Length: 615
Image (tube, rainbow, N blue to C red; front, side, top):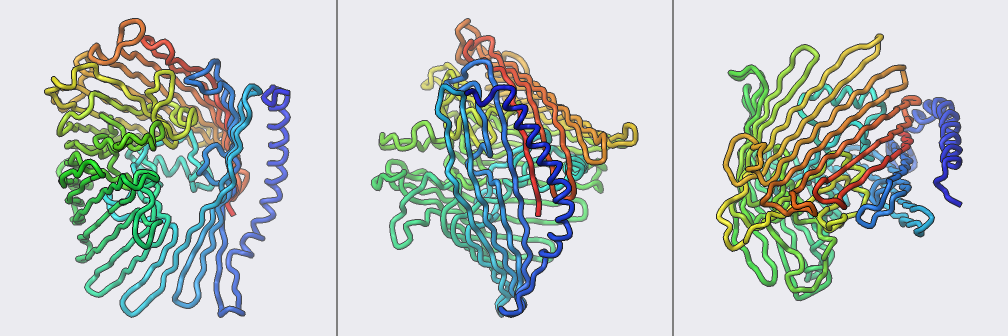
């Protein structure tokens, strides 16, 4: 029996909507019950006050494509489709006297079913736990954490920031209503980046002491991070520790200065003769003025393994944010950065496009599953990568209900190490990312790199590496528009985002949209959302993507370079049942075609249904 026949899909959807209607009334009645349990006191253990909360999320999507793409099955259903996206999160916050604490658990389980030709894949149920406690002492406020996220600085501990649009729904969205989500996005003029990527998760122990004398504070972190997964089995008495980080900071009123340190060490997988390490140490400073804010981070980092011991390289980031009191009367920012080639920190905001770490001993220990290396990466505005220096500027302005921001960025390699360019597919990126999971050689030409909710592609420059005398120069333009109006007494938002990138061997402050560039990329994304009823939002999305190479890059079967065009169209419906529960439906048509590489063609649809409850 074909599970994906139209009759079965129809009955499943009807059954789900009937259950949802029942839940709407039941959850409305349960609001008073949830308030009853919001604050529970246990006198038997000394007046401990506890507050319970959580999120339950069911998400299922069905993708239907017309043909195979790089060995991927054309028809797939996902239930909680990513192995690290929780379907249930539980949090408990409490206090006893001056001591405050919280702990949480996240349960994850994924299912991926193919058409009848292939056996389905069942994910394993697993959980993630963490907690923290704040204890006041004579020396200061001591905070202990286990398996929690932390932020040291941009270059020492964080994560690569990522922009996402308002149509696709990441699993960690905290908004309880669509009205709140779209209103929040409109209120911020700049293009929205995912705040989840500010912090880096730590599987281990953290100790933070604040309110020390003379306005000092300190942090010590021990354990393992998501980005240190390629460091394993350290020697010594603590074999589970592959990451050690810390911070010492001092405040001067509104200003702050801090020393930050990040160190990853271990072996290449389980091969004990391949020890390697990556370290970076920086000084950060924050200075606040009534007209501007100045931030800087200056330091040095290096990478070494059993064969290579690289020199320490400098790292510099300086940024000034001007408010409306400046001479332009408009908010704008200017950033300069210099990232040495040997900076290799997989637990920071610095993406690695220069250090090739894979298989230094010929052990083939990572192979196609190493997604830590993106040679010649085309970066978005403000995104940092090693072996580069550059400048980014951004200005914001508003004309009545129209909000806009314009950004211009330039960066250049310090040395040309690889004849490769890696760019990100922004069009229907969430759908693309589920074609395969965490591999660096996927697709009909083995040139796609699959990240979590991201998809990259490599394009090769066909020139003799021994005769390279140029350094690749990268240009970026971002233009973001947001508009709010009222139609028939209901709120309508219109969002439009444009991103342009070029890569050439010519230094220019502006993108070069001609065949003089190795690579040109244009992406436009338009989203309209309308609150047509008190509990309903309808969302329309359109995406358009162009990627072009020149004759100096790899040529396709017809003798011409990359010539890609991608289109996506989507419609969605949000139904906020009440204060704690909502249903989200999304349907997307997508089409991608390369006129030069005949196998790089895909077309299909994806439908998703999400049911989310806050309690």
